[in-house]
Image 1 (tube, rainbow, N blue to C red):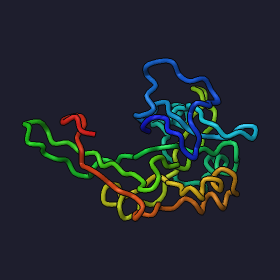
Image 2 (cartoon, one colour; image 1 turned 90 degrees about the vertical axis):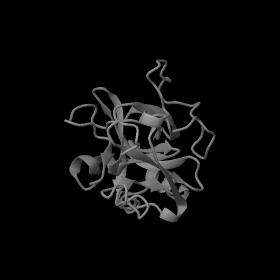
Image 3 (cartoon, rainbow, N blue to C red; image 1 turned 60 degrees about the horizontal axis):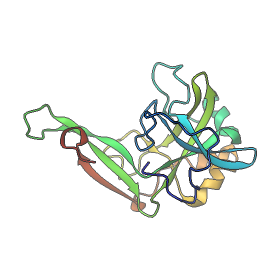
Length: 204
């Protein structure tokens, strides 16, 4: 997430919770377990919030950053409740290349980063859910089958990107309408760049 732009989602100047005041909060680097911006509704108001990217709050062997099987009871409960739905605003997302690359610098080969963007949405919305946990509010992104642009890099899944016209449905629609939105985004409306190697060449 690059910056805090004025978009159709509104600016993050309005937050449900107090803005973090420590140096560990870096919304430009969304990583498992980090705190990041999400957008949710409360008492009829839609605004930004800051939550940890782990919807189970550390109560599992791994951080629960992505959810796909919405029919499972614990996820269906969140999908059915309007108050637990949220949007995750992103400017681009990354997947690592399946193969490692020899950069010819005498160091071990490493995987490269492939960065995906939405052509006509500088900031796009990803479908998500959130809930209170022992460690504070936590969120997860909803995934789906990959499209033909993402599949060669990550064959198992991609994040569920919402078209602008689908945002209201995600936030206020029925369970069946929510499940219907869990589909690959149009690859013709996306671009990809890479591979880049920020840890070795300071690329990004």
